[in-house]
Image (cartoon, each protein chain N blue to C red):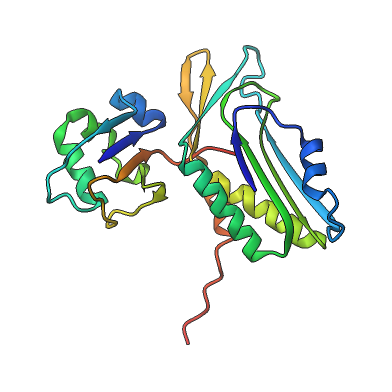
Length: 155
Length: 83
């Protein structure tokens, strides 16, 4: 399941709803992404998350379906916010549940690695020098690449 | 054809969206970008490094050789920074 929303979410409530009553679940893994303070020396460094309505939901749904296909998950949830956020605010939640922990850990990592390269969001930082668009990081592409299927050697 | 621009592209081009009717020989993403660059200096500058721009057609990532047709929604944006 995926949600794209402006409002904050409560991780505790979401976890309870995700696992509620499903006793096949032995392990539940949660990742929460937060707004980091980019200007700790002073001055609030708020940011605004822009997104592409329509494509955002489509990409997150597709990534979620892929996780469900690749790992034996009992449930999965991605919530991503947009709009103006301040340091300490929650941006994203990824939760996965499975009978055993390995699938839950791996699927959670896969989901956050993939959404960081595929989900159409862009961060605009407020700085003393003016608004600046955050640049994508090469590390995110590399993190996503490790989840690509291993190519079989030619026969 | 509806074009959408996001993030710094939107700022550089001064618009987030426009309706266009490219000539009939614009059949793919590559051709569309070439036509846009030729149309306007602002576009030529913004699309100077085509490797830095991502393209989506009807909400799916598209490659230079992928087709574009009348009625399509084509979006241009820098690499994403969500999460």
